[in-house]
Length: 435
Image 1 (cartoon, helix red, strand yellow):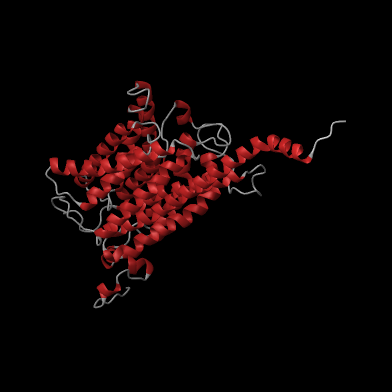
Image 2: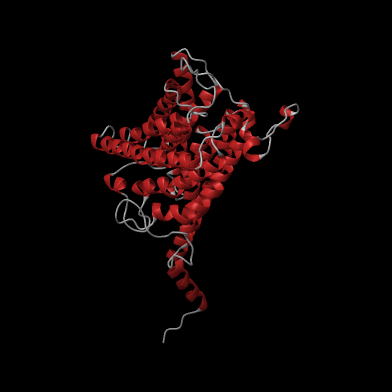
């Protein structure tokens, strides 16, 4: 009979449990990292609210803030109930998931703590996609109508396309992912999808009253009420993007350094690109254009931040910043009234960034195969999101009215939609009434 002392037994038990302890420690560190970055992505909603409110007129400040606030609230519930399952559930068809709806231990037998962490992180992405519509459609959209559209985008349009790229977390995989499509953190999945939905909303709504001359079609400037908020919102978005891209590793590992560095370089280069393009084309160097240039750089690098060398990350951001400025003027010439420039910043720059992820792929640059797959993904995103969103906004407009009345638009949506005034001291001598 072999006798084992208590000390020897303790050593044996430690050796036997070492792999499990190591795995548990890794899971804990990964969970902590992803939860922290989810908080950063959540903070981006504050950035969007400040930027969009600052670019809007004072009489619509409350309305813009309310839409951003409820994007998170409704989006969280709907993505948990429906969107997460469509996007990440078992996906053997390649087109959408069909499990893990309303994720809970009461609905999923083998649920793990990590599942809750992934749901939290991805919920913040879903809220970001919808918020893009809010700014583009500001100052003339009925509040209830917007919220219905936001719910439908979160429940179906966004998660179904997301399943094509990121789906199959619990089995199977999306058809674009199987082709080799690269979109690490969502230049197309999040930003372009949100932008194409916003473009559809802009078309159905039409421009704000007085935005374009009726005879000549010439654009009239309608400046925002607080450019300080715009700059502050831009800084907050920039900070949040470190979580947006860095957290997409879903692991606390050494890859984070390059990802966050590329994010920083692209944002800085995007602002410089906006400045250079404005100078070259003899346009004024606007604060709003500069901030949008940096955001466009962030959008552009989001697809390839993990697979691109730093010099190409800077180039990607620089071109994205130029696209943001040019895209805003392109939209104006077509009488498309995008209050905050969301479509150029998130749509045009997102498409460019997705293409750049294939062009500048480390160890396989300028591969025709990768470029072709990236183009397929970009085109698929547009022809999925834009027509569906167009139908959604058209039906809402027909059934309940999407656009506020001219009188309500002139009075401001703060009062007409919420019975509140964001800046009451500006309106001390104004009498409001409803007919």
